[in-house]
Length: 114
Length: 109
Image (cartoon, rainbow over all chains, first blue to last red; front, top):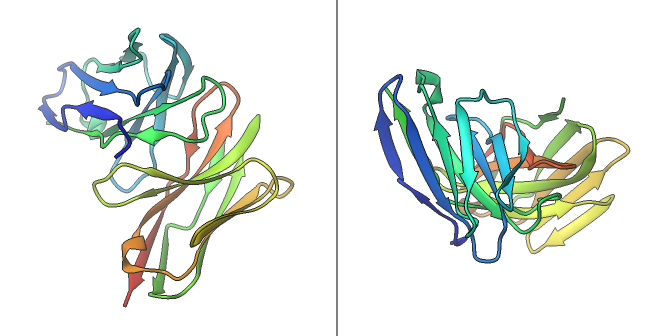
């Protein structure tokens, strides 16, 4: 157990809907990163938040957005869901805003878009 | 941009030694990490190399050659529970880790 919790664990949505995924980081960690993992693939970096500011973004469209709160928990919002958004969404927390070699992952939210 | 290459599958028997290679192309390289992920589970941190050489943690070792943009994970005394996916990941300045596509290790008895 890493101390990183994500909710919900599973979610089913239809195309065009919006979804919000939540993550509580490990105690003492001020950085949260979000990843999308399609079946059989590696985690793809979506974005990272450090002390409530976005601190890096991967190759994802603007309909993927996020927030980090003062307690360092975080949300991932996806608008206008597409079928290809079906994946495991992983949240990871870490200590630093720069070099983040050691990430502590939550168990993820499995999103299915129908 | 950045890219990482690792074999898609590796098979071995219990008690054997297996090496999973990773080559990378990236800018602003900070270090190479390795993660393990069992089916349906969260990736878990195994090791990290910032400098050239070998890092040993129990049955697992990791190696990095910055000049060759190459690293590997060495798993010794394989056990059935080591069957999982293994990902190499590079750290870059100002952003989170970038992961490879993963290597599925199957350990048989």
